Image (cartoon, rainbow, N blue to C red):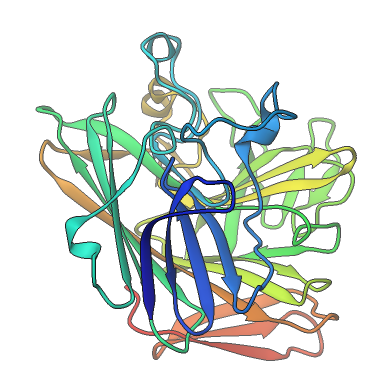
Length: 357
Protein backbone atom coordinates (compact mmCIF):
# COMPACT_ATOMS: atom_id res chain seq x y z
CA UNK A 1 0.00 0.00 0.00
CA UNK A 2 1.36 3.41 -0.96
CA UNK A 3 0.30 6.93 -0.02
CA UNK A 4 2.13 9.63 -1.97
CA UNK A 5 1.54 13.26 -1.01
CA UNK A 6 2.50 16.67 -2.35
CA UNK A 7 3.85 15.35 -5.63
CA UNK A 8 3.12 16.66 -9.11
CA UNK A 9 0.95 15.43 -11.97
CA UNK A 10 1.76 15.33 -15.66
CA UNK A 11 0.85 19.03 -16.00
CA UNK A 12 2.94 20.04 -12.94
CA UNK A 13 -0.12 20.56 -10.73
CA UNK A 14 0.32 19.45 -7.10
CA UNK A 15 -1.51 16.18 -6.46
CA UNK A 16 -1.86 13.48 -3.83
CA UNK A 17 -1.95 9.77 -4.73
CA UNK A 18 -3.12 6.65 -2.97
CA UNK A 19 -2.82 3.19 -4.49
CA UNK A 20 -2.76 -0.49 -3.73
CA UNK A 21 -1.86 -3.49 -5.87
CA UNK A 22 -5.00 -3.06 -8.04
CA UNK A 23 -6.06 0.60 -8.32
CA UNK A 24 -4.75 4.15 -8.14
CA UNK A 25 -6.55 7.35 -7.10
CA UNK A 26 -5.17 10.83 -7.86
CA UNK A 27 -6.46 13.95 -6.08
CA UNK A 28 -5.66 17.41 -7.47
CA UNK A 29 -4.88 19.71 -4.55
CA UNK A 30 -6.05 22.73 -6.52
CA UNK A 31 -9.73 22.20 -5.76
CA UNK A 32 -9.63 18.71 -4.24
CA UNK A 33 -11.00 16.91 -7.32
CA UNK A 34 -10.44 13.18 -7.80
CA UNK A 35 -8.92 13.49 -11.26
CA UNK A 36 -8.04 9.84 -11.85
CA UNK A 37 -9.32 6.46 -10.69
CA UNK A 38 -8.00 3.53 -12.67
CA UNK A 39 -7.06 -0.10 -12.61
CA UNK A 40 -3.37 -0.90 -12.60
CA UNK A 41 -1.25 -1.03 -14.61
CA UNK A 42 -2.16 1.94 -16.85
CA UNK A 43 -5.92 1.34 -16.82
CA UNK A 44 -8.48 3.66 -18.39
CA UNK A 45 -9.56 6.61 -16.23
CA UNK A 46 -13.37 7.19 -16.48
CA UNK A 47 -13.12 10.58 -14.73
CA UNK A 48 -11.55 12.40 -17.69
CA UNK A 49 -13.28 15.77 -17.51
CA UNK A 50 -12.06 19.30 -16.85
CA UNK A 51 -14.19 22.40 -16.29
CA UNK A 52 -11.58 24.37 -18.25
CA UNK A 53 -13.14 22.91 -21.41
CA UNK A 54 -16.09 25.30 -20.82
CA UNK A 55 -13.86 28.36 -20.48
CA UNK A 56 -13.82 30.98 -23.24
CA UNK A 57 -10.04 30.44 -23.37
CA UNK A 58 -10.27 26.63 -23.46
CA UNK A 59 -7.76 26.48 -26.33
CA UNK A 60 -5.11 28.05 -24.05
CA UNK A 61 -3.10 26.35 -21.32
CA UNK A 62 -5.17 26.50 -18.12
CA UNK A 63 -3.82 28.47 -15.17
CA UNK A 64 -2.52 26.79 -12.03
CA UNK A 65 -5.45 28.08 -9.99
CA UNK A 66 -7.94 25.64 -8.39
CA UNK A 67 -10.83 24.39 -10.54
CA UNK A 68 -13.29 21.50 -10.79
CA UNK A 69 -12.21 18.34 -12.59
CA UNK A 70 -13.21 14.67 -12.71
CA UNK A 71 -15.05 13.84 -9.50
CA UNK A 72 -15.35 17.08 -7.55
CA UNK A 73 -17.16 18.21 -4.42
CA UNK A 74 -19.99 20.77 -4.43
CA UNK A 75 -19.89 22.53 -1.04
CA UNK A 76 -21.53 24.65 0.47
CA UNK A 77 -24.10 24.46 -2.35
CA UNK A 78 -25.14 22.65 -5.51
CA UNK A 79 -25.94 25.15 -8.20
CA UNK A 80 -25.84 28.95 -8.34
CA UNK A 81 -25.57 31.57 -5.60
CA UNK A 82 -28.11 34.35 -5.30
CA UNK A 83 -27.36 37.65 -7.03
CA UNK A 84 -26.34 39.18 -3.70
CA UNK A 85 -24.04 36.26 -2.89
CA UNK A 86 -22.48 36.39 -6.36
CA UNK A 87 -21.73 40.07 -5.81
CA UNK A 88 -19.81 39.02 -2.68
CA UNK A 89 -17.70 36.54 -4.65
CA UNK A 90 -19.56 33.24 -4.31
CA UNK A 91 -19.52 30.96 -7.38
CA UNK A 92 -21.58 28.04 -8.66
CA UNK A 93 -21.28 24.85 -6.60
CA UNK A 94 -19.59 26.64 -3.69
CA UNK A 95 -15.95 27.08 -2.77
CA UNK A 96 -14.60 23.53 -2.36
CA UNK A 97 -13.11 23.54 -5.87
CA UNK A 98 -12.00 27.18 -5.64
CA UNK A 99 -9.50 26.71 -2.79
CA UNK A 100 -6.28 24.78 -2.24
CA UNK A 101 -6.46 21.54 -0.31
CA UNK A 102 -3.64 20.26 1.90
CA UNK A 103 -2.56 17.07 3.55
CA UNK A 104 -3.62 16.61 7.15
CA UNK A 105 -0.78 16.06 9.66
CA UNK A 106 -1.95 12.52 10.48
CA UNK A 107 -1.84 11.45 6.82
CA UNK A 108 1.93 10.95 6.74
CA UNK A 109 2.94 7.34 7.12
CA UNK A 110 -0.61 6.02 7.29
CA UNK A 111 -1.08 2.71 5.51
CA UNK A 112 -3.88 2.78 2.99
CA UNK A 113 -5.23 6.12 4.23
CA UNK A 114 -5.05 9.55 2.62
CA UNK A 115 -6.16 12.53 4.74
CA UNK A 116 -6.86 15.91 3.12
CA UNK A 117 -8.55 19.08 4.27
CA UNK A 118 -9.68 22.51 3.08
CA UNK A 119 -11.27 25.66 4.47
CA UNK A 120 -14.02 27.59 2.69
CA UNK A 121 -13.48 31.23 3.69
CA UNK A 122 -16.77 32.76 2.56
CA UNK A 123 -18.95 29.86 3.72
CA UNK A 124 -17.00 29.52 7.00
CA UNK A 125 -16.99 25.74 6.64
CA UNK A 126 -14.08 23.34 6.88
CA UNK A 127 -13.97 19.92 5.26
CA UNK A 128 -11.77 16.91 5.99
CA UNK A 129 -11.57 14.01 3.56
CA UNK A 130 -10.32 10.53 4.42
CA UNK A 131 -9.69 8.15 1.51
CA UNK A 132 -9.18 4.48 2.39
CA UNK A 133 -8.42 1.34 0.43
CA UNK A 134 -7.50 -2.23 1.29
CA UNK A 135 -4.97 -4.51 -0.42
CA UNK A 136 -6.45 -6.69 -3.15
CA UNK A 137 -9.64 -4.63 -3.60
CA UNK A 138 -10.62 -2.12 -6.29
CA UNK A 139 -13.02 -0.47 -3.86
CA UNK A 140 -12.23 2.94 -2.36
CA UNK A 141 -14.01 4.37 0.68
CA UNK A 142 -14.31 8.14 1.08
CA UNK A 143 -15.40 9.91 4.26
CA UNK A 144 -15.93 13.67 4.41
CA UNK A 145 -16.46 15.65 7.61
CA UNK A 146 -17.96 19.12 7.33
CA UNK A 147 -17.56 21.49 10.29
CA UNK A 148 -19.38 24.81 10.71
CA UNK A 149 -16.89 27.39 12.02
CA UNK A 150 -19.51 30.15 11.89
CA UNK A 151 -20.69 31.56 15.23
CA UNK A 152 -24.26 30.86 14.06
CA UNK A 153 -26.07 27.91 12.52
CA UNK A 154 -26.75 27.82 8.78
CA UNK A 155 -28.14 25.78 5.92
CA UNK A 156 -25.87 24.21 3.32
CA UNK A 157 -25.59 21.36 0.83
CA UNK A 158 -22.99 18.78 -0.12
CA UNK A 159 -23.15 17.00 -3.47
CA UNK A 160 -20.61 14.61 -4.97
CA UNK A 161 -20.07 15.42 -8.66
CA UNK A 162 -18.44 12.42 -10.40
CA UNK A 163 -18.14 13.33 -14.08
CA UNK A 164 -17.29 10.77 -16.75
CA UNK A 165 -15.93 11.66 -20.17
CA UNK A 166 -14.53 10.11 -23.38
CA UNK A 167 -13.19 7.63 -24.25
CA UNK A 168 -14.94 5.83 -21.38
CA UNK A 169 -18.08 7.80 -22.22
CA UNK A 170 -19.56 7.13 -25.65
CA UNK A 171 -22.98 6.37 -27.14
CA UNK A 172 -22.83 2.79 -25.82
CA UNK A 173 -22.07 3.68 -22.19
CA UNK A 174 -24.90 2.51 -19.93
CA UNK A 175 -25.90 4.29 -16.71
CA UNK A 176 -28.00 2.43 -14.15
CA UNK A 177 -29.26 3.30 -10.67
CA UNK A 178 -31.90 2.55 -8.05
CA UNK A 179 -33.30 6.08 -8.22
CA UNK A 180 -37.10 6.23 -8.37
CA UNK A 181 -39.24 9.40 -8.51
CA UNK A 182 -37.71 12.27 -10.46
CA UNK A 183 -38.16 15.66 -12.08
CA UNK A 184 -36.49 17.84 -14.71
CA UNK A 185 -34.49 20.84 -13.49
CA UNK A 186 -35.62 22.89 -16.50
CA UNK A 187 -39.18 22.99 -15.16
CA UNK A 188 -40.06 26.32 -13.51
CA UNK A 189 -40.55 27.13 -9.86
CA UNK A 190 -42.58 26.83 -7.71
CA UNK A 191 -43.40 23.25 -8.81
CA UNK A 192 -40.48 21.89 -10.85
CA UNK A 193 -41.49 18.35 -9.85
CA UNK A 194 -44.49 18.55 -12.17
CA UNK A 195 -44.58 16.46 -14.27
CA UNK A 196 -43.04 13.61 -12.29
CA UNK A 197 -40.96 10.95 -14.03
CA UNK A 198 -39.58 7.55 -12.96
CA UNK A 199 -36.02 6.37 -13.42
CA UNK A 200 -34.67 5.98 -16.06
CA UNK A 201 -37.22 8.04 -17.96
CA UNK A 202 -37.30 11.79 -18.51
CA UNK A 203 -39.27 14.25 -20.61
CA UNK A 204 -38.22 17.18 -22.78
CA UNK A 205 -40.26 20.38 -22.72
CA UNK A 206 -42.27 19.22 -25.74
CA UNK A 207 -43.10 15.91 -24.03
CA UNK A 208 -40.61 13.70 -25.88
CA UNK A 209 -39.50 10.74 -23.77
CA UNK A 210 -35.81 10.14 -23.12
CA UNK A 211 -34.10 7.09 -21.60
CA UNK A 212 -31.32 8.30 -19.29
CA UNK A 213 -29.56 4.95 -19.35
CA UNK A 214 -28.13 5.95 -22.72
CA UNK A 215 -26.79 9.22 -24.12
CA UNK A 216 -26.86 9.54 -27.90
CA UNK A 217 -27.78 12.68 -29.84
CA UNK A 218 -29.83 14.86 -27.48
CA UNK A 219 -28.72 16.32 -24.14
CA UNK A 220 -32.16 17.63 -23.20
CA UNK A 221 -33.27 17.57 -20.49
CA UNK A 222 -29.74 18.34 -19.30
CA UNK A 223 -30.28 17.71 -15.56
CA UNK A 224 -32.82 15.30 -14.05
CA UNK A 225 -32.99 14.56 -10.32
CA UNK A 226 -34.27 11.43 -8.54
CA UNK A 227 -34.77 10.34 -4.96
CA UNK A 228 -33.38 7.16 -3.42
CA UNK A 229 -35.98 5.18 -1.49
CA UNK A 230 -33.85 2.21 -0.36
CA UNK A 231 -31.32 2.13 2.49
CA UNK A 232 -28.45 2.33 0.02
CA UNK A 233 -28.24 4.35 -3.17
CA UNK A 234 -26.11 3.36 -6.12
CA UNK A 235 -25.24 4.44 -9.63
CA UNK A 236 -23.09 2.64 -12.20
CA UNK A 237 -21.65 3.58 -15.58
CA UNK A 238 -20.72 0.62 -17.78
CA UNK A 239 -18.61 1.02 -20.91
CA UNK A 240 -18.73 -2.28 -22.81
CA UNK A 241 -16.36 -0.95 -25.48
CA UNK A 242 -13.81 -0.20 -22.75
CA UNK A 243 -14.51 -3.37 -20.78
CA UNK A 244 -14.95 -1.35 -17.60
CA UNK A 245 -17.66 -0.47 -15.07
CA UNK A 246 -17.48 2.40 -12.58
CA UNK A 247 -19.81 2.29 -9.58
CA UNK A 248 -20.75 4.38 -6.55
CA UNK A 249 -22.54 3.24 -3.38
CA UNK A 250 -23.79 5.35 -0.46
CA UNK A 251 -26.32 5.45 2.37
CA UNK A 252 -29.46 7.31 1.35
CA UNK A 253 -29.54 8.92 4.81
CA UNK A 254 -26.34 10.75 3.79
CA UNK A 255 -27.19 11.37 0.14
CA UNK A 256 -30.94 11.10 -0.58
CA UNK A 257 -30.70 12.55 -4.11
CA UNK A 258 -29.24 11.42 -7.44
CA UNK A 259 -28.76 14.09 -10.13
CA UNK A 260 -27.94 13.16 -13.73
CA UNK A 261 -26.27 15.78 -15.94
CA UNK A 262 -25.52 15.35 -19.66
CA UNK A 263 -23.54 17.47 -22.12
CA UNK A 264 -22.80 17.06 -25.83
CA UNK A 265 -19.84 18.52 -27.72
CA UNK A 266 -19.78 18.52 -31.52
CA UNK A 267 -22.77 16.16 -31.43
CA UNK A 268 -21.02 13.52 -29.32
CA UNK A 269 -21.32 12.64 -25.60
CA UNK A 270 -18.79 14.80 -23.78
CA UNK A 271 -19.74 14.68 -20.09
CA UNK A 272 -22.12 12.84 -17.78
CA UNK A 273 -22.50 13.84 -14.16
CA UNK A 274 -23.44 10.97 -11.81
CA UNK A 275 -24.12 13.33 -8.93
CA UNK A 276 -25.43 12.32 -5.51
CA UNK A 277 -25.91 14.38 -2.40
CA UNK A 278 -28.11 16.26 0.03
CA UNK A 279 -30.22 18.16 -2.49
CA UNK A 280 -32.03 17.68 -5.76
CA UNK A 281 -32.88 21.31 -6.54
CA UNK A 282 -30.30 23.26 -8.54
CA UNK A 283 -31.33 26.68 -7.22
CA UNK A 284 -30.08 29.43 -4.84
CA UNK A 285 -30.69 29.08 -1.13
CA UNK A 286 -33.79 31.28 -0.98
CA UNK A 287 -35.55 28.92 -3.43
CA UNK A 288 -34.51 25.88 -1.38
CA UNK A 289 -36.01 27.38 1.78
CA UNK A 290 -39.19 28.45 -0.01
CA UNK A 291 -39.71 25.00 -1.51
CA UNK A 292 -38.50 23.00 1.49
CA UNK A 293 -39.10 19.47 0.23
CA UNK A 294 -39.76 17.56 -2.97
CA UNK A 295 -41.13 14.00 -2.90
CA UNK A 296 -40.92 14.31 0.91
CA UNK A 297 -37.11 14.70 0.72
CA UNK A 298 -35.41 17.75 2.20
CA UNK A 299 -33.60 20.12 -0.17
CA UNK A 300 -30.92 21.26 2.29
CA UNK A 301 -29.07 20.47 5.52
CA UNK A 302 -28.84 22.55 8.70
CA UNK A 303 -25.63 22.62 10.75
CA UNK A 304 -25.08 24.27 14.14
CA UNK A 305 -21.94 26.26 15.05
CA UNK A 306 -18.95 23.99 15.77
CA UNK A 307 -20.99 20.97 14.66
CA UNK A 308 -19.38 18.35 12.41
CA UNK A 309 -21.47 16.26 10.01
CA UNK A 310 -20.03 13.15 8.35
CA UNK A 311 -20.78 11.69 4.90
CA UNK A 312 -19.47 8.45 3.38
CA UNK A 313 -19.52 6.75 0.01
CA UNK A 314 -17.67 3.99 -1.81
CA UNK A 315 -16.47 3.76 -5.40
CA UNK A 316 -15.35 0.70 -7.31
CA UNK A 317 -14.10 -0.47 -10.69
CA UNK A 318 -14.72 -3.87 -12.29
CA UNK A 319 -13.90 -5.35 -15.67
CA UNK A 320 -16.89 -6.36 -17.82
CA UNK A 321 -17.36 -8.26 -21.11
CA UNK A 322 -17.88 -6.33 -24.35
CA UNK A 323 -21.51 -7.52 -24.55
CA UNK A 324 -22.43 -6.39 -21.02
CA UNK A 325 -26.07 -5.20 -20.98
CA UNK A 326 -26.03 -2.98 -17.89
CA UNK A 327 -26.92 -3.44 -14.22
CA UNK A 328 -30.25 -4.81 -13.08
CA UNK A 329 -29.58 -4.73 -9.34
CA UNK A 330 -26.85 -4.04 -6.81
CA UNK A 331 -26.72 -5.25 -3.22
CA UNK A 332 -24.27 -4.56 -0.41
CA UNK A 333 -24.19 -7.26 2.28
CA UNK A 334 -21.65 -9.36 4.17
CA UNK A 335 -18.81 -7.03 3.16
CA UNK A 336 -19.46 -7.67 -0.52
CA UNK A 337 -21.08 -5.78 -3.39
CA UNK A 338 -23.12 -8.07 -5.64
CA UNK A 339 -24.05 -6.82 -9.11
CA UNK A 340 -26.52 -8.59 -11.38
CA UNK A 341 -26.48 -7.96 -15.11
CA UNK A 342 -29.65 -6.81 -16.82
CA UNK A 343 -31.39 -9.16 -19.26
CA UNK A 344 -31.69 -12.92 -19.74
CA UNK A 345 -27.98 -13.64 -19.19
CA UNK A 346 -28.11 -12.10 -15.69
CA UNK A 347 -24.40 -12.63 -15.15
CA UNK A 348 -23.34 -11.84 -11.55
CA UNK A 349 -20.34 -9.73 -10.59
CA UNK A 350 -18.98 -9.61 -7.06
CA UNK A 351 -16.80 -6.81 -5.72
CA UNK A 352 -14.82 -7.51 -2.59
CA UNK A 353 -15.66 -4.84 -0.04
CA UNK A 354 -15.37 -4.42 3.72
CA UNK A 355 -17.24 -2.59 6.45
CA UNK A 356 -18.10 0.61 4.60
CA UNK A 357 -20.73 2.39 6.63
